Image (cartoon, rainbow, N blue to C red; front, side, top):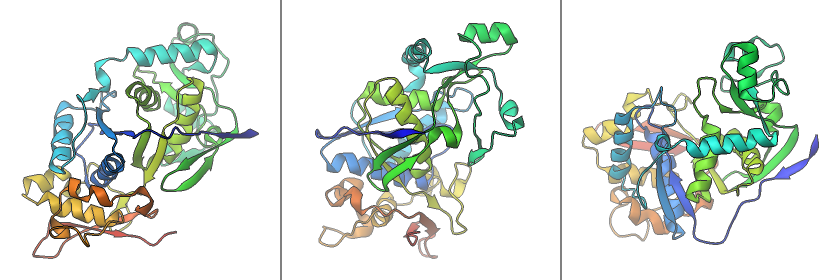
Amino acid sequence: MSAALHFESRAGAPPTGRLAPSPTGPLHLGHARAFLIAWWSARAAGGRVLLRIEDIDRARCRPEYADSARADLEWLGLDWDGPVWFQSADPTPYRVALDTLLASGAAYPCTCSRSDIAARVDAPHAGDGELRYPGTCRGRWPSVAAAQAATGLPAGVRLRLHPALAAFDDRIHGRVEGDAESDAGDVLLLRRDGLFAYQLAVVVDDARQGIDAVVRGDDLLPSTLRQGHLQRALDLPHPTWAHVPLVVDPSGRRLAKRDGDTAIGALRAAGVDPRAVVSAIAGSAGMSGEGMPGHRERLHAREWTPQFHIRRVPRAPVTLEFGANDAPLVPRFTVQSAP
């Protein structure tokens, strides 16, 4: 294993952050907490916030979910600078980045299907149902066209990784280290169905939009190590990162888009006061209404901004429950004990 790679972040000027919902289903209260913390983080530092709809996966994304995501964010009191950015609008930059990586030898064609990878005894799960890619197609063909001609199969593209400890400083979790190659194998950049993969699209778009401060759920911590390698291969800057612990239900299960009772849209439709939701989330992010005008249960997102600091955000997961009989739809967030 080579010496540790340190993905150093830029710092100095007011940050440019982003809200990046994927329109594959309705947003839930876990998304609400992550997006509010991302928005507070940028606004409290005098920075900009951009809205990006990550709809690159045409098979799963639907326009009505993009519309409802925007309505949810507005209901929470969040705003953004400039027009909304849709990933699907122009895939050309992804193709340019992919061609650059293939030309340099940093990436290679791959014809493996998920079942092919699962059949390999040396391809253990990387976590959350993800399979580690064992490098089957490394060095086999000089181009995507050659791979397809030789096998008669559609080919994707993967980023070539090497075993190496990588590290970055997370603004919530502190120093994070890991070996992306050992954990998940070579990173998928282009799927066999011709769709660009999340890892490539998000790295290219963060650079194109000048995003230098990323705040998102800590389920994406492993992705950050992979994206660091991709940014390095494309000679792109590394943003600062902050990974917000997830929201779970009382049984400890993470929230999912299929859970309609936790959907932001359901609370909107029921007439729940958004200030109650925002203030509950503010409390779970280490803020207090003491000394502020009005009641802490009834403060808008912008009114909480002066109190926000990323260092106050707990490192532990947060349990979501709902209020008593007099307020059955008002969420309550309880920070769990630190592990």
